Length: 223
Image 1: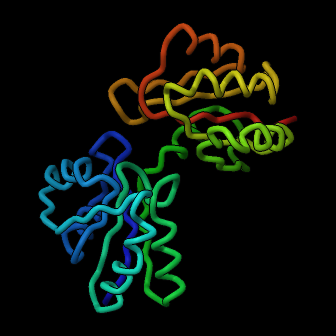
Image 2: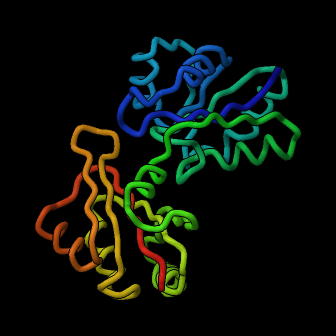
């Protein structure tokens, strides 16, 4: 039966790939990948020979219709991103929406997502939280931070290593220097690290030690 599968891939450690994910990627008619070079290494490791096509933020608006037509004509498709679950700060939403609107079956497999382990091991409340992903780079950033300063739930952000210090500085300015934060980087990888403390303490740490790798920031909500 024609279907779109959303298939999570490891965020670092290849042992986090599920048996089911490997089976689905072997059985579908074609795979859509955010970066075929990155995903090619994953497919080679698990001996997956399914035809793969590029589907990323720069071409997904143009490719959705063609992919939808293929699925409607009876093919099965798996969408993967470079790491983690598709559509979580990665391409996937547009194609998923198009399939849902056209009554095409969509199935999302459970699997790796960076913010879950970062939230759970932060030591901050995780019964209620809000996922913000990446903050706006320029336009709308100040407005968003002012709004989030009043958020009482734990807040989750993604950030690039070269912007981490700047972002922590903004947290000190808008959330307060004593707000508790937890920064996890290189999750599941050899040099995995989580740094916890006040914004001031964590900012001092990464001012002295330049961060590397993928980063998740967990911020305490306003009391």
